[in-house]
Image: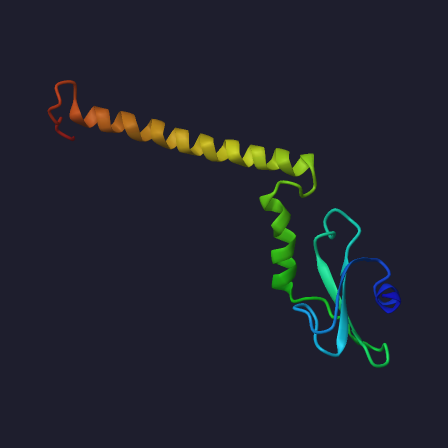
Length: 125
């Protein structure tokens, strides 16, 4: 764990995967490091350390699509960046609702105009 801290000093330890577990190989420990800021605390970076001599095997960041996937997970729970993001989502929701309502407003009177008062279709000019 000390090697992982020295390798990525700007990150904190999230958890340690023991050898042979689902998140590590037979001959190595995997230390998962997380960022300290609100934006990076959900982004895990593995540091793989060999058991035999305690040497660093790998500290490569995950592929870009894993960063994207892990970074978007908190959006589903509404706890990403606090109140500012919640307000942005509320504005986007209101814009979507407004677009739906204006579409219905423009569509429904058009249907009524075409059928007329008695239900007979009017000729289109």
